[in-house]
Amino acid sequence: MMKALTAAALGVAASVAQAADDVTLQLKWVTQAQFAGYYVAQDKGFYGEEDLNVTIKPGGPDIAPAQVIAGGGADVVLDWMPSALASREKGLALVNIAQPFKASGMMLTCRKDAGVSSPEDFAGKTLGVWFFGNEYPFLSWMNKLGLATDGSDGGVTVLKQGFNVDPILQGQAACVSTMTYNEYWQIIDAGLSPDDLVVFKYEDQGVATLEDGMYVMEEKLADPAFEDKMVRFVRASMKGWKWAEENPEEAALIVLDNDASGAQTEEHQVRMMSEIAKLTAGSNGALDVADFDRTVDSLMSGGSDPVITKKPEGAWTHAITDKALN
Image (cartoon, rainbow, N blue to C red; front, side, top):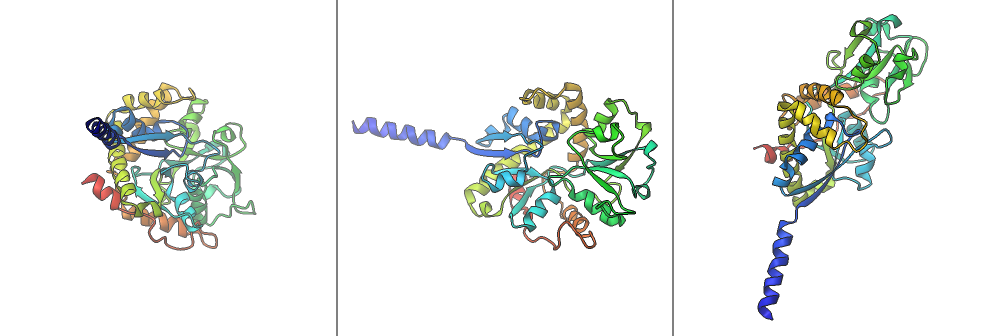
């Protein structure tokens, strides 16, 4: 009897040792190639190799990653740095643990026939802007240009843009917010040609801010078990990203396999993945401190109404990537 008990106890111990650690990831938006690295890591077994059981939660127009993690609904969230730093200044202690996106994909796309050929032409125009934390880079840019965004004379009128490009197609706005990998192509697919448009990339305007970083709650990092879990998560995720960069078409198909909504098409996802690969190229996952400083400077250069009012302390760490990537 004693022998049998011991064997049973050993069996329980073995199964506990083999149980993978659960990680819940909250995406910033719906399932699409913007998040290919994570779906690839799951599909190719990179998470499994790190003893992780990862649940990937899609986002949407009414899902704010910061609110999800504040409510305990995720271990790690993907967010743009302006939104994360604004949340941090308001008291939600988010920390950037990895930065797979090196460049910004954000643009303002304008119709030439609306009389826009340079940023000097924005004054008096209606511009489409995303909110829910996505407005911060735009507001920072307008502050830099000295353009009021309250609709007053000489400034710009801000149209709260839904997550589509209808305002530019229907003539409600001279310009709309677009990403290089998504909404710009929706405008082209709707019938306007590149020659009809003028595009202002935030990168080219010197107001680019970091996008799609991995963020966790600061107090969780004090737990060695959580830190170890994040090291493995970042290592596997970056392996997924580099695989996706090298195999964009197959990565796009993996994303499609995970699209429960059925809304995405192969053509759109393959095109998106080829654009996303340009943004993740050059990053091994470790945050470049110069990119962080540039983002902070941009967000603080808002004159009387900056996005953040002081330089954040402790808003990022290399502790995870130093262990994950070396």
